[in-house]
Image 1 (spheres, rainbow, N blue to C red):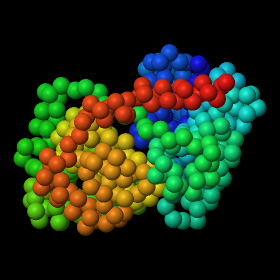
Image 2: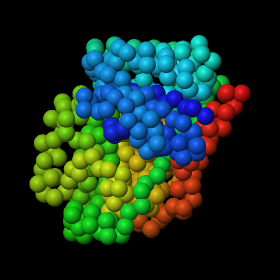
Image 3: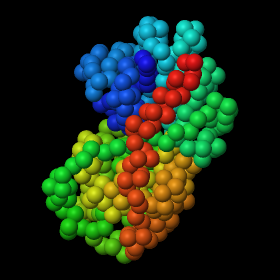
Image 4: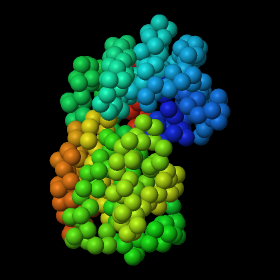
Length: 384
């Protein structure tokens, strides 16, 4: 089967969406399919075409940016050729160009599937309001033209204004999650580098430094945590400098974080590669996902933490609360509540042995090969 995957950003860009797309593409290749990823050349230094882990990646040049998106004038031309050459098209949304690609699928008789990762909620402002409206319109056009729409959980689908319109086309598949195996020496070296033995408990946060991620909720919870655990520290994994369109947010929070950095209670790790992430999770006593709006639909990092028997405190957002609730591996805090986030963490620290899971069974549930097999079956049905 020749599968065309279309999305705005692909690796080396790091986000839950790009990681999902990469894992699925690689798993489909391992199952014997020919996978082409069509994406944008969002940085000038990226090659226009390359092979990555058996996946052919084609990047279309970008003319300029609009908010967090990009405009690539030749995207439609390249899409016409690639849709014609492939058997099925899979698109990752939100994506401005999706309706044009889905339309080509209709014209050429190629089934198209949308994997819908989240609702778009840009910060307030006149310009962002326009961008939100345009993207919502584009997503809806793609939804009308697509044959199927996939999302992570029914919980998220039930609360998404977008997905509720397409119940007949909707399918829910749990996302692909895997971590590379790392040696005990690597884990020990990571813990030694960040002085884990000297500072416990360790709270992890793995995300971009962005307003919707709720970094300030963890900041507001820190005094309560430090009152009970004076040696607690936060390890923040992910991009925290020069995050596009988030500078005002960073400027507002960084003075407070600086105080915690200077006292050893907060450490920024930057963007970690997969092996480094695999060493990061065992160092934690808990992971937090205090996201604030529907741009977060699940939180793959929660499953990655749970694979290391690390419990999570997640906000009560639809979808985001599901990993904790499904696997009984942590606590759920009210959206935006620093008090409940602190309370959830303190409960975990008081009785960490209570939060244990069957990691082998969990790995099988989210195995990329199993997820790819589910997509494969759906693709085959649509082609028939």
